[in-house]
Amino acid sequence: MTHNKMIPVVAIDGPSASGKGTVAQRVAKALGFHYLDSGALYRLVALKSLQEDIEIADEAKLAEIAANLNVAFENDEIFLDNCRVTDEIRTEECGVVASKLASYHRVRESLVARQRAFRKSPGLVADGRDMGSVIFPDAVLKVFLTASAEIRAQRRYKQLMEKGINANIKVLLEDIRVRDDRDSNRSVAPLQKSMDARLLDTTSLSILQAQNCVLEWYKASCANRRV
Ligand code: CDP
Image (cartoon, rainbow, N blue to C red):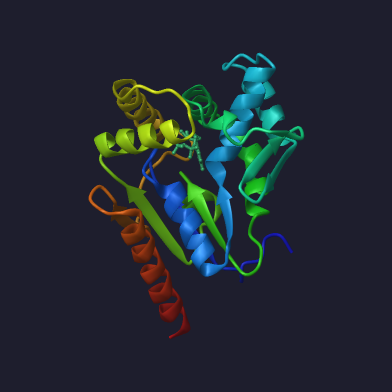
């Protein structure tokens, strides 16, 4: 069964480059759970639209691309139409286009079932913007993971450099601010901390500290569910 309410979900939402992907992956590994990088799906739609030269204003065509994406997630690799695109989708160009097309209701709708299909036994850690609010509203733990824009720009810079992708820290900071603004102010599934999400500010935390905090919270929420 692909959408079993008994299978626990940990939803980790937050702004661009907050480190939620790294934390979510490590938490998934520690718990032996599956992992959903929902942002990768938006980036894949962006990449495909760039490959096909689709206008960013063409919502219907972008929704069609989203509905028919031929993708495979295998271990740490991502394939689009059988080609490895793991690094290609991480460019800032893909990120910016992804953020723009993610504001379209029809694009988001086209990706809902695909995201819920990741909910498989023994559990799922999902990271994105609307994991706790829209895709998995019954998640056992919802975390809103953030950090200051400056720290996030530094982290993104380091991440891109490690991948051999050239970047400029000032441009990255500006891009993060613009993206925050767009993601937070869109009318569909805006990036916001929901009432039932726990805030985790990682500005002065290491990855390990952030990971341990989420694991502690997960244990506590499981214990609470049992009483
Ligand atoms: O890497 P970064 O944190 O910047 O972004 P990402 O998680 O790879 O997602 C790329 C873009 O997809 C974001 O800027 C969001 O606009 C959008 N997105 C979304 O709207 N909803 C999600 N659940 C995940 C990503």
